[in-house]
Length: 130
Image (tube, rainbow, N blue to C red; front, side, top):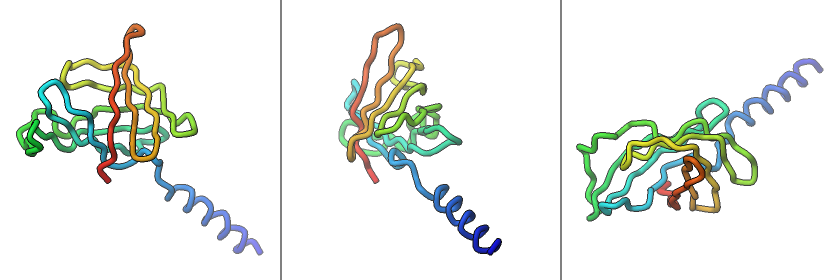
C-alpha cells in the first residue's frame, strides 16, 4: 500500500513538472523602426518566465546572422498571474537600449508584451512561431 501511495505521489509530481507554461515557445516581434523583427525564445526560468533573442531578420525577411544582440536576455522575472496574464517582469528594448517594467498577456497565438517607465508604456503584439 505504501508503494502504491508513493507511486501515485511521484506520478503527480512528475506530471506537474512536465506541463509547460502556455507562453513558452518561439515568438516573432512586431517590426521595429527599420522594418526588421526578432524571434524571441520564451521559457520557464525557475518560477518565472524569461526570453532570449534567438534570431534577427531585416525588413525583407532575410536572417541577420551578424545581429549584435543574438542570445541576449530580453525578458526576465515575468510572474504568472493566471488567466494568461504575466506581470512584475522586466523587458529590455534593444532598439533603445533601455529596460522597462513589463507585463504580458497571452491570447491564443498572440502575446501582448508591454514595457512601462514612469507611467509611459509602449507595447507590441508578438505572434507565435512554434
